[in-house]
Length: 280
Image (cartoon, rainbow, N blue to C red; front, side):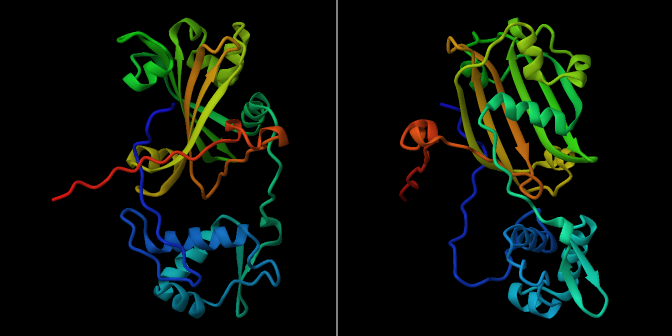
């Protein structure tokens, strides 16, 4: 079992009609509106005419001021998602359509694709004692050190994922900053003869703290996708623990489950940690 996520927040009850934006700590109203509109554009809500609702309509729908609407639309335009046409309104750019590409069937293929498509910045690498929960998952004795690598991957200058990896010291001798600038971590491990087998992963969410917000260029308190992956070798020995954090504004997680695994735990399962509130 992977560690219990540290950040959990209740989701609001879904409704059939739009409601005013909430006052989320650390997330401005115009940013909330930006996220909602970007999601709707991605889902093709405005595919028919390409036109977004008028500013007045957005103000009424979300219960916000005109300046809030204009700032959200300006952010969308700055990213090349929409274009403002004088006297006509705001329209989705024809070249801004988000393609829902098919996921790969291989974890290694996915890692290779990520390494090829992104530029890496090594933020930190070296020997350190991992937190107790990570040490237990890597089957390390108390106090034993491991190799810790913190990297930021970007596309076209925009940060898309922060990876925080731990590798047992015996397997991380070649994991250096210089090596990580040239090769992905999985490639370094494979060059040492490491083979990958079983993979256990958990997908949750977390709120961006100041450090994560700075690295991923988002706001403090903004929601982040969080993928935790524990990789084993063919003999079921853990060889790597990695946490990947991404902004849902720029990234998503795709999975491909074969027909013979649909009704198995390989397809994933829901885990709920609900604790009864203490009684007075």
